[in-house]
Amino acid sequence: MCSSGAVFQWRRVPVAPLELQMFHHAPEEASMASGHNVRPTSWVTVLLIVVASILLGFALPMHSLPLAISGGVLLLAGLIVGGVYHVMDDAY
Image (cartoon, rainbow, N blue to C red):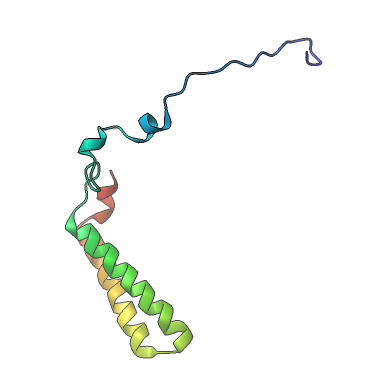
């Protein structure tokens, strides 16, 4: 009992198994891109931005202006491709 005199009882709430919560389709139909609106332009955008980040990551400690410029150009290209092809619309 608590101070107000009320008695609390714990009860179990039925929950679906974890496998059913995570997958909304049959496992045999599952593929990497089956549940998303994935387009090749999305992958190109991600690749450009990741490579640009790696180049900029090396350019900073190495004080390399050519690496910094190439990383900046790739980053700008990735942002432009992402904006032109509306990559953020792929999430939904």
